Amino acid sequence: MRVLVVDDNRDILELVKRVLRSEGHDVVIARDGLEALQQESATQPDFVVLDVNLPVMNGWEVCRRIKERRSVPVMLLTVRAERADIEESRAAGADHHLLKPFDIADFLKQVADLSARPGKRPAAPKPDS
Image (cartoon, rainbow, N blue to C red; front, top):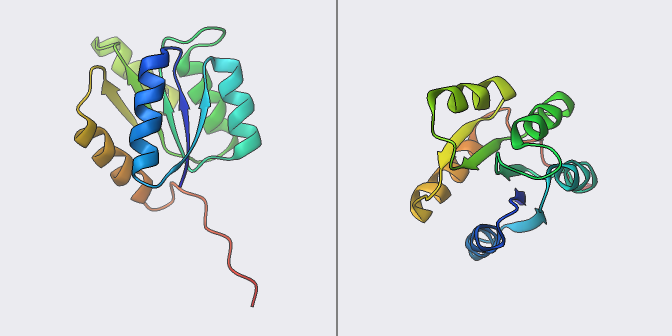
């Protein structure tokens, strides 16, 4: 599965990238909201992990724009824990709002659960017969 990981914190970005790659995923990274939209459009990931507090454009706006174009699971990975923040994540179309710091096993379980939901991933191309 191709996963777009967006975070301006290099340590978080590298941790998530390493964990996802160890699970066999292809990982694409971005460090701000505009780069996230460019990478999403260019690579058409199967899953997006997105920080809320990003330079240029916040994660909620990035999520909204991605969800306007296509149905792809989006997990917001953020320190924003207030009720209003969680509601904003839902309003933006996020499929999950996971708080930092996070447990790696829980993160991977959420990725697996969200990516397995029917209708959330684009259909795989059929091999030529």
